[in-house]
Amino acid sequence: MCGITGWVDWKKSLTGEEKVLQHMAQTLSKRGPDASNHWVDGHCGFGHTRLVVVDPAGGSQPMTRKHGDINYTICYNGELYNTEDLRKVLLGKGYTFKSHSDTEVLLTCYVEWGEQCVDHLNGIFAFGIWDGERLFLARDRLGVKPLFYRQSGGSLQFGSELKAILAHPDVKKEIDRGGLQEIFGLGPSRTPGHGVFRGISELRPGFAMKFDRSGLRIWRYWNVVSTEHTDDLDTTVEKVGDLLKDSIKRQLVADVPVCTFLSGGVDSSAITSVARSAFQDDGKGTLRSFSVDYVDNDKYFKSSEFQPNSDAPWIKKVSAELATDHMNCVIDTAQLVHHLKEAIECRDLPGMADVDSSLLWFSKEIKKHATVALSGECADEIFGGYPWFHKPELLDQEQFPWMRSTLERQAMLKEDVRNKLKLEDYVIERYRESIKETPALDGESEIEAKRRALFYLNLNWFMTTLLERKDRMSMGASLEVRVPFSDHRIIEYVWNVPWEMKMLDGREKGLLRKAMTGTLSHDVLYRKKSPYPKTYNPAYTKAVSSWLQDTLNNKQAPLLELIDQKVVQEIIDSEGKAFKVPWFGQLMAGPQLIAHLAQINYWMEHHNVNLVD
Image 1 (cartoon, helix red, strand yellow):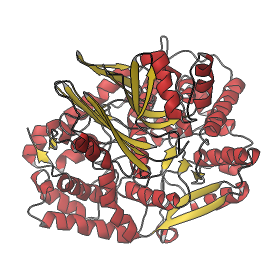
Image 2 (cartoon, helix red, strand yellow):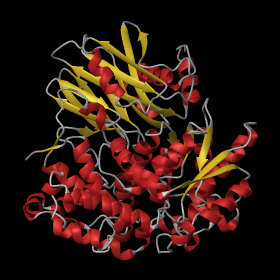
Image 3 (cartoon, one colour):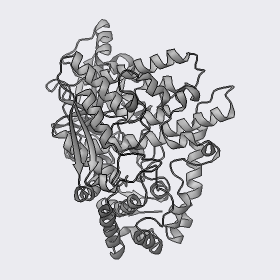
């Protein structure tokens, strides 16, 4: 993986602007600690930081290929999982290659197919290609890899992270009403395409864009397509199993050590099982697996609807059954709190409190032993694993099911801010916009249409939020994380599978469990879903409460411009219990809200954010 950034300016030559590009690229050094390069050609410049995963010698970037009279230059972050398939096709068309890197293959795909090259790719990617007359940018179908941009007149900057664009001298760190609505109304999720900072946008997953002298053109090159599912149950189970196994095996390709995340749940356990078998078949030795836990979690863990049991005994069971070289990483409260600020610096935005900071620390621990890890994100969004998929009453409510706290969010704000932001209106508008995007299926029943819309919301909102978290926290540790469930072939197929099949045997993700029969023992295969672990240690609540209290006591704290101090003080005094519902999802309850508010203040200070109308 890498960090990419670039700048196109039609009004001036960028020769002599190398220091600006170097500075933009340096902000992404954690994404690519192994090398940093920049390139300038007239009106365009690229910056690149590299994390070496494949072909250390031949994969340097930015990379240029001449074809005819045109020089094509690429700046690329990601990993292609069908590199050799594409190389074979391109060799058949007469192209030759100097390396075995996927970068050279991707660049050659653009030379051959132009803008349609994205249709041929299986992988995770964000890249820019310059041919002397235009800049082409594209992002992978599910948004595993990030890409932001800012256009102003004849100039455009882009980057893997917001910080690269914010490092450009023409860019102001301003937050307007829309940015505040995103943070307080929707955070830590974001409206697809919204960059929060004024003037900055995100290229949405499955979208591409072209910037030339005539302006900017953006289009969607991929989306799920709703059609009738015609396969019977046995065929469906077989196809799901085959697709997932193929995805996992493709994503093991690397010239550096590869491992897996392991929680003892069906998603990560299935990936670990298939990866372990592939390691054995290929003579790669013993697969390493890693898990995360908290000091004294066995003492303070509280069973709930969302987290019915602790991961620890399941991790021990699975790692023993699969004979992985397993390491359990245990984080203490001091480290958990310490990484809250660094997590903000990785995100450039307020995030998910300790759900972020623990992953950042965990990724650092894994990085000591491996460079690439496979993780189980996206399975719940695809197969219907979350609680809100199984509560029929939520299908009739006009709201994001993971965020039922809009009124409580409004109540935390000063009255004038509350009146200005109108969070309730903003959130419902964003919800309705997304629902309208859902690809409809003619003849589908009303309840199935609503359920399809719910899956669409999860793909485009909740899943992208978790993928953003995984990318920023892992790349903050220079660790590449791959997510086999995000393979677009799996998404496209399972999208049209009827709910009754997805809920096979009356179990959440029943189809996935059936498809993985034979890879895991029955009790692991049918373990009830449990989300990413969080701490229940009261010392954490005390520590973040103290941090937020110090913020309230600091009359210069920028957060005080926005919040009702009395309401927030009640939240602190009650250890979060005064906020009656989870802030977000299943994991961000009272203690996480307290930390989140303190993080918002730190984010405003760190970026020296300027609030504008």
